[in-house]
Length: 362
Image (cartoon, rainbow, N blue to C red; front, side, top):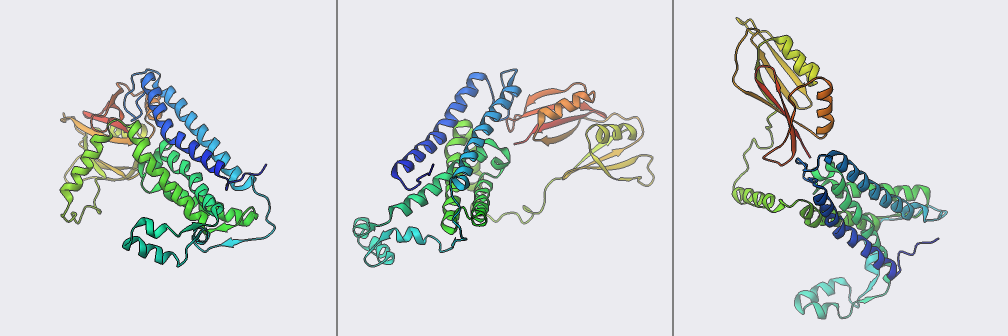
């Protein structure tokens, strides 16, 4: 079976399918989640079975994405036959340019556009190779779902939604073009690389403009805060330390060093980095580390009453962390909603009047 990407009916069908996915998916997703009492922003859900239902939702989304990937592989490789030779086309947008005919070239078209208007500029432009336009358009539409679904499904792409999806689409297109060249199922085409990347950018833009807006009802407040920050920073030089400093160390007080070691190292999984015995002091200072976070605990080794102390951590898998803590015998775990981000969090008491809070980060 041969797939004719140049036919008008195929282009219309693909456009309709992509439009249905872009506009219908978030609407249906939001409606179903509201009916089931699920919180898509990561906060506490009304449904007691929310964790299981959210896993089912994620599995369905990944299944749909896998179907799209299978179709993509079929179009990129399985639908093509061996060309028998290695072919490379590196002239950017040459085929798209040759698809149009102008009496004096495109430079004259743009000059006329600014002098005599749109109608006069494009009155003599003729389409002589519509199949090249259709092929370029099809390559764009093929990657729109990729740029749209990656941030919709995977939080890693949502974290840097303006960069990661389109960059992934560029790298994927680069890989596909090289594999087509190596396997001789097609040829290396610079136009495909450009159109695929453009499709990924359109997809991620549609997610930001529609998918995110529909599934995150509080987007107006987020946008208002972002605009307020930009307005305040307008015309002002950024602080010279703004890109060089980040808070990575928390300092707490402790009494018994063995209790401190059992809680922070054995239970929470901090890695001991260094310990110091201060001069003229009977206690001991510990420096623990977890990823980029450092924790300093100053132990007095004497019974003392400390004021409330707080340790806040972040995780991408709050449910798994909560289950591990319960298995290790942690008591008093409370699940709440972070008032600042709306995400879920759990908290439990630690030694020396410490309250540990772990927030689910997306």
